[in-house]
Image (cartoon, rainbow, N blue to C red; front, top):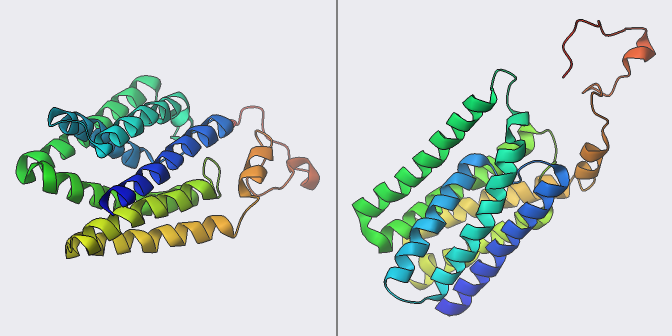
Length: 234
């Protein structure tokens, strides 16, 4: 049962990462909230090293696969992430911000590890950041006003990938704290699935919008208004 649930989680999260890479490259954006991406990359690389220090394991292999996939998603963030930030965020400032975010993510993982030890730290940190990720995906949908850089495949696979270890650690191993966090993740994940499912054409519409189109969908020429040549373009 343990191996089966570990493999279900591994396959589901691998689908999340592969789809995030595909959607990110397609929409020329990053398909995972950056804070969640940083924490995931830090968790997977940290615990992949820890797993292989003690010998070969299925979870260690899964962690390596995830970490490699994360590197590609990190590339999409570094390549197109600055475009979603305010204009005052210059390239050097964006680089500094990115180093800070990813550096803090590694620091958080190492603090968990130092305080709780590998066994508890790997589980508690994973579920806490998973809950954060579930909320951040909804925030991503709201900030982009639609499903650009997102997909129902990512949402469903994330839900399944979290549900499997929730059952394993929360029910089979009887850890109420993890069970509670896993159920909270499921609530947010199902809400996110519902948001994407109610707007199946959102990504296509977002991709079809011409650059520079008015956000409200109003043609400036239609009501006689003309943009001033001196006005900054969006």
